Image (cartoon, rainbow, N blue to C red; front, side, top):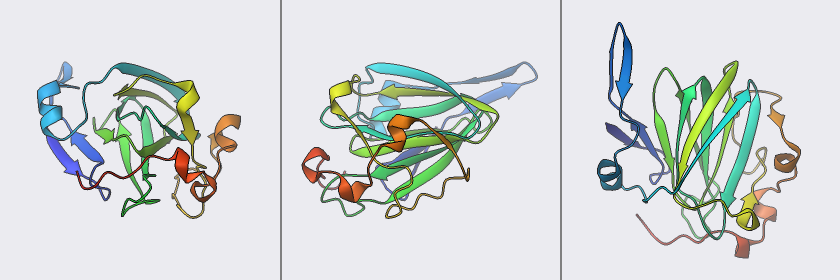
Length: 187
C-alpha cells in the first residue's frame, strides 16, 4: 500500500496493492493497523454505499459536532472526489484538493474530520463506498455550497445534477463560524 499526502496534507490518497491475473484481481481494502500507522483516525463505525448516475454531484457535506473521518472508494465507475478544509483557524481554510477514484485505479481517499466532502460522477454511473469514524447524526449535518466561488472547485461536469438539499447549502463565508470545526494544530 502506498500513502500519498495531498495538497491538504491531512487528506491521504491510498493506493492499495492489487494482485491480478486472467481470473480477475484481489486487493485488501482495509487493514486497521496499517491504516492507523498512516495517520487515519480509527475506528470506523459505519459503512455507507451509494449509486449515482453520470453528472450527479453530492456535497459538500460534514458533521459538526460528531465530525466524521471518511475512507472513500469507488466499487464500480468513476468519480471526481473533493475534500475542503473548513476548520476555523487552519492555514489551509477554504482550500480544496481532488482526486479521481475509480474501479480501474482502485484508489481510496481518506478525508479527516473537519473537512467537507463531495464527489461528482464522471462515468455512466458509480457505486461509491465509504467508511466513517462516527455515526450519522442528522442534527449535526452541515453543508457548504458546491459552487462557492471563494473555494473555486473546478468540477468536471458543467451542469451537474444536484439535489435540492445540496443546492440550498450556503457559501463557506456565510456559515456561522461557531458551527464550523476548529483547527487543532499540525497533525
